[in-house]
Image (cartoon, rainbow, N blue to C red; front, side, top):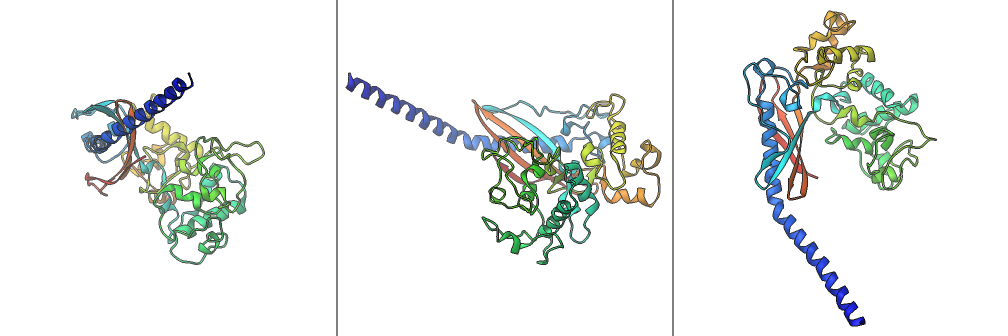
Length: 363
């Protein structure tokens, strides 16, 4: 009996091992197919962004096909589906989002012309109410980007970061990925993600006290950041900033990012969204009325909006009606085997319609 039990265990173990080996072999076989499906999804995204209605070629808005909108074209441009597209042995779904719906952190924190008012409004929206904490975060972001080795009044350079555990150098250059904010003095996971965000791992630097105001903020699994005895941050910096892009696109920006425009408060930002959404009040539908130029935000075009004058004209230093950098997500699946690909597509400035994939990777 003992022999039979031992043999049964051995056979069972071999069966599990063979099943794992078969699954790994199958996944390896799918790898090349998956990659080409991901790249095909990027090409599909380029097609979707290039085939715009003639009357909308000079703007980017949420009612357009690439953004999942339903605006009809006067020239009947053919719109192919972006979701559950059959491709070879599997299928893909493509999601496109422009970077300009958020603020470009490198533009806002440009050391030659820092937009501190935008950073201050952003931190206030996040829930950072302490003036000293806000000043530390702003100066540290500027120092992270500034190539000079001299730290700002409340900021930090390599001499600060090299004393952390683990130590690391200050970037002294532009932010390439918005998650770099987690490395910057004063920015905790709650400030970056928002207190109500879940399932985000705590970075190694933050776990070891990498922030100026570091404190235990999440369990080791990164399940969540909520704690009744700690400050609550209803919005995360990741919702307001991107690491690429240009001026803020008022046709795609959220209420949270619109109200960061200097001179724009929350009620005015809400009216901008109300105007562009059209009579039904829903972005991305047939009756949308996206702005055709930044000047439409001035004067009577937006009820109670900023009046024509130096302050209103200065808004055009911050806003646009076009987007130039797009993030593409491609979900691919073959027989239950799934993989997610990401691409960054850049479009030439001005009237150029050239679309180029400048980055491609998978999770």
